[in-house]
Amino acid sequence: MLERKCMKKVVEDFDEKTPSKADHWVQNLKCGDSVNVYHIETVNDLNQFIGYAKRINNKYGDVYFRGQTSLYNGKMIPSLYRGQERLDSITEKYNRRINKVVKSKGFKGYDRAIFEPLIQHYGIKTPYIDLVDNVWVALWFALHEAQTKIINSHEYVYYYDSKAKFSYIVLMLSDATKGKEEKPGVYVGEKTTLIDLRKSTSSVFLRPHAQHAYMIKKNEECPGDYSDLIVGIAQIPTSKGLSWLGCNEFLSLKSLFPACHFDSGYEHFLRYYPEENRGTVKAYGSIQILTD
Image 1 (cartoon, rainbow, N blue to C red):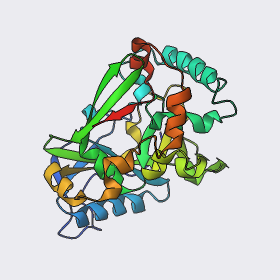
Image 2: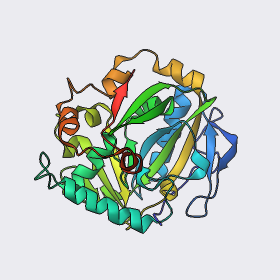
Image 3: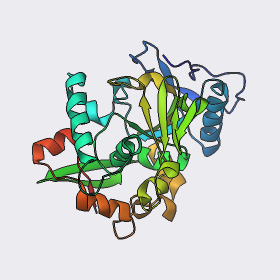
Image 4: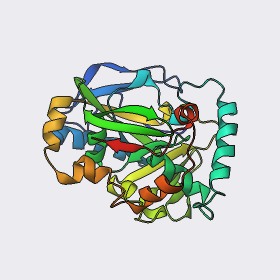
């Protein structure tokens, strides 16, 4: 297990205005541990909460963010493995599919180590987990829900303001930047591999650059649960979070998910990524099409 320090109690470094612990916490994590959920009411509290998590973990790695509308019963399961029981079987099938795609028209010469996390950013299910290093982008994802509809070979996605009372920013630790940068933006640690898509991919793939995107993968054959990488969880009233975001164009849907008219990498995926039948799309995802 990756060594880490969780936000388990109000500590001396916080003053009397520290975030207060909520009346519940994430339990049944993969490591058998639990992580408190802290209730955040102000921007200053959120910044302090994140800063403290980063400092107490600076010997072990770097802390990144993930916005969620729910805590999913304490699980952090990659999209490829959600609802699956035979992880080894799904991994074998997935590997065959990806190896076939990177040899197909339009993708010959793509480095799989970068290609996998990149295609997840556009809708394909993989063993990676999305992270960011920008708290405002994480907050946007915490405050917005997605509805999907599969039609023929594509998955159509609609984003809207969350109706939930609370939204969550999950803080996760990676030891990868303490390890080796094997390729530009590809960091490999003892327990995790971290991809900085802004360094590893061209900006013709505009979406990951707009979203300050990282992808993380545990160095296991079938990494089915990432909850043991969680070091802290912030619970934010959704109404407050939406007011904090305001009407910033950088944090608008059209900025975070640029249309293929602007994102030529997205256009390339729509043009060349193999189309599948409805059942296969449900299992492995597709290059998503956003609707409004």
